[in-house]
Image 1 (cartoon, rainbow, N blue to C red):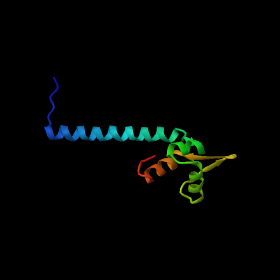
Image 2: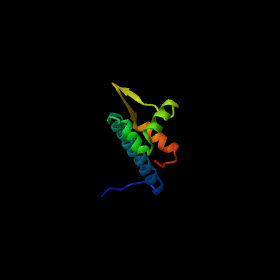
Image 3: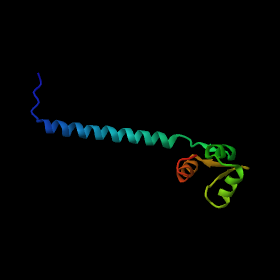
Image 4: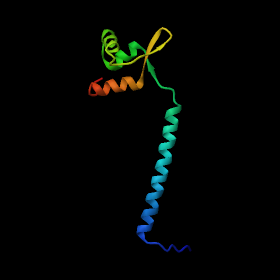
Length: 94
């Protein structure tokens, strides 16, 4: 039989520290996994569908620096971050 000589407050403090330690480890692992995943890139047509806009609107937004595309050869692709930023700007209506 094991005899623990500690009060309830000490037990809660220990458990709290363990929960914080485990949570930090889980967050570190999740961030590590997220950094290793390749980012989804959208074509012009895909971006228009996700944002519920027309291609001329997308071209105008590019010209006005409202959205930034990345050239890959002859294509222009849009990152998930850019798409999500615009969705938030539109108030989540996309």
